[in-house]
Structures are given as C-alpha cells and as structure tokens.
Image (spheres, rainbow, N blue to C red):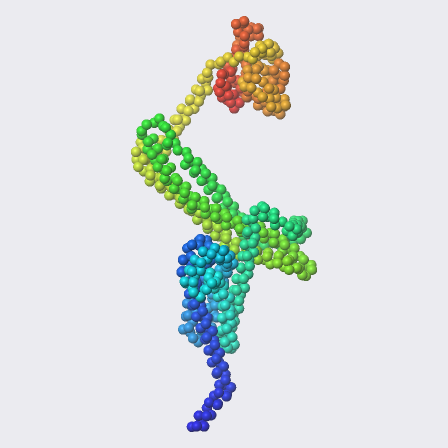
Length: 623
C-alpha cells in the first residue's frame, strides 16, 4: 500500500499526459477568467452609461439643450445596442461547452450595429471636449457640474465630464483586446479558435472604420466652416500658397476642357449631386413661396373694411362686420403664428442644413482637381510629396463621406419637406374649419342662408351680371354726355400768328396746346398752354405716332401728341374771311367740339380743368 501510494503521485505528475492535463486546465481557467472579465466589465460599462443618460444628464438643466445634445450625442442608441449585447453575452453562460464559440459569433453578429452607433459618438467627441473646456472658463458653472458628477460617480474625480465622456471610446477600443485575451487562452485546435480570430479581426476593422469616419467628419467640418466666413476673413486667408493652388486647379480645369487630360467620371456621385441640387431647389422655391404667402397674409390682416363707416345700417352688414372682426382678432393671427412656427421656421432650418453639404460638394470639385493632378504626377514620376499625398487623402475622405451620406441626406430632406407641406395643408384645413364654425351663427341670419350651393352660385352670377350691365350702361352714357365746351383764350398777340397759320395750312391742320411743353429733346419744341400750331406730320422719322412734327409759324419741331387737340374755327357770318378777321367785339377765335374723333388724334374741345380732355384723348388713342 505504501509503495502504491508513493508510486501513484509520481506517475501522475511526471508523465506527459499529466503535464498536458495541467496545462489544459490552466488554459481553460484563464479562458474562463477572460470570459468573466468580458461579461463583468460589460455590465459595469452599461451601468455607467445608464447613469450618465438618466441621472447626470437630467440634473445638468443649467446647460442649454443644444449643449446636452453635443455632450451626450447618441448615448441612448449606444445604450440600446449594448443592452442587447450584454443580454446575449449573459445568455452564453448557459452553453458552457460552447460559450467561447457563441461569444465569437455574437461579436460578428453585432459588428455592424456597434460600428453604426459608436462612429457617431466618436465623431462628436472632439466637439464635446471643446464644450467642456468652455465650462472650465466659468468657475461657478464648473463647480455646479463637478458637484453633480461627484455625487453620482465619485470615482470620476477632478476630471468630471471628461472622465464620463471618454468611457464609450475606451470600451469600443478594448473589445479587440478582450477577444485577443480569450483567443490566447483557447486551444488552436478548438472549433472556437477560427471564430474568435474572425471576431477579433472584425472588431479591429470596426475601430479602423470609426477612426476613418471621424477623420472624414473633421475634414467635412473644416470645409463647411469655410463657407460661413465673412469676406474680410476670406481675404485674410489669401496668400501665395492659396493663389498657387487656385492657379494649378484652374490650369487643370482648362486642360480638361481642352481635352488634353481625361476627366474623372463618377456616375454614382453625379447622380447623388443632381438629387441634392433638385432637393435644394425645391426647398428654396417653397421657402420663397411661403415668404410671399406670409407677406400677403400680413397685408390682409392690415386691411380691415369692417371698421370703416358704412352707410348701410343693420342687416347682413352688421353680421359681416362682427364675423370679420372676430376672425381678424383671433382666427387669422393664430393661424399666422402657427404658420411661422410650424412651416416657416422649419423651412429656414432645412435650407440652412442643406447649405453645409452644398459647400462640401463645391469643395469636392476643388479637391478632385488636386487629386487628378497628383495622380498624373504619380504615374509620371512614381512618387509624390507629403502635402500631395495629404491632398489625395483629403479628396478620398470627402468623396467617401459624400457618397455614403448623400443618399440619407436626400431622403431625409425630402421627408422633412414633405412633412412641412403636410403641416401647411393641415393648418389651412384647420383655418377653414375655424372660419366655418365661427360663421355658422352669422350665416343663419343672412337672407339667403336657406339656398343650396348651386342656387346661391346662380344668384351671385345673376347679380354680378346685372351689376356689370348697369356699369357698362353708365360708362356709355358718361362718354356720350360731355360738359359744354368752354372758351380757352389765345395767348396775347397770337391772333396774327393764327391768321398766318390759317392762310397757309387751313383750319383742319390747326391744333392747340393743352398744357405746357418743356421740350426736353434736341428737336423738341418748348410751348405754352393755349398756343396754336399747325400739324406737318403725325409721326416722327422713326414712325413713332405719339410724337408729331408741328409748325408754330416761326419754328418747326416735335411735340407730344397727347398734349395737342384739334382747333376748330366757328364761322362768324358763314364766311372764312370773317373767321380770319373777327368782329371788333370778339378779339379771339372760339374753339368748337369736333363731331367725330380722328384715329390716333386727340380731338376734344378745350376744358377748364383738363380732366375730360385727358379722358377723351385716351379714348382717341386707344381707338
């Protein structure tokens, strides 16, 4: 028994099989410890995220909502994904023999979701740190924030917000290390080994993609801000380096236009750019139309006929005035306020949101020219400088970002615009309902409320037709009945001039000036009201019939046709001689109304005030 007892331990510890079992047990133990570390740290990490989202964010009410959105970014999405991930991780414990294999598959399954949520959070991390730095410049605000954080998370220490904000970045970068630790303690011959290898490689790719996305966002942020610079800031940036770059780009563009070098074609990007152009155009046109609509609505609200003094006592007029007063004091102002808040402001925000991508599209063209020039040099020389390599990377980053995000942007912008238009229609419908509800009481008291809509429409058309006929009849009578002509005296000393014009041209060529003529042109005459002239030609050399050539008896020139009227001589004793030599008791010639207007010639008699003269002249010119 003693020998057997002494031989058994030596055989178990000294044999190769025993050493293999001990090594396998240690490997399995370390593997289980690595798995336990993964699950425990994931639970602790998720608890910290939930603490940030619920307790700390809700207590930082002294910060603007915009700051909170930047600080905590999409932490809710991160919590949602990691909650499902932790739940599935804990479920693998029930499959002890296949737990490691299940963990590897689980990471592969969550690869895309982890990358989707963490790249957004990591891209906004730098902007969050800038906010933290601004808070530190305000001691009182910094103390308040620090007190809230230390009360919820004592281990945060003096780092405060910075300690909390960096936790998601640390976690996503730690996943490949945790997987590598499990992999190192897994037998290479085990079925779980290749799965863990793929999972570790996938999480490394996730981190690489997140870093690339973050870099693209930084480039996009840089060139988006350039579009917001003032003219003075842009001029300050001009130097020999920028001038050299612009000259090189222009040279590259001219060579492409001349066909000396090929142009890079990207049909996918061209399609996305065209879509963005049309979306931006729709937003701009809608914004302009809504601006005009608001201006017209404002003018409508200023026009209040119900407050005017009407000479129609009682009846439907009182009901109308009461209804319109109620609508303009309550319904229409409320509608305008809702329209500005629910339609106009979102439209302005959408237009502003699209300006950044439009600037990036323009900047991409510049970077594309740089890229093409560097590619040509790379083919010719075989090497490029660091700055040229950076230019290549900048273009690739911009192009990749736009190609990846323009489809989502176009879709989101169209959905946003559609919701705005739906809201506009709903506001119109609500306004119509309010007007009808408020008008129900007043409509019941109107004389024609019992009529059906077709009958009421016919009644309105009949009344409008009858009123139109009365208006036309009044117009015809007004044009037929003119005031009696009044005598407009000739200018002093003009009798001899009139007699000379009569003897030379005859009475049918004489016209009288109805108002003073300044004679602004070179060949234009300067005449006084009442002066008599003789018509030589009823148009100028260019065929303009509104400018006549006349003779004053001493000068010839052009005068406006609208300021001349036909001068008719009333026969004294039925003899023309007596027209030329009037009686002693009449020292002037008397104008006579023309029996019929001559086309394109104003033919009315002289009036005191000139109003009817102008009206008749318009009739004569229009025909």
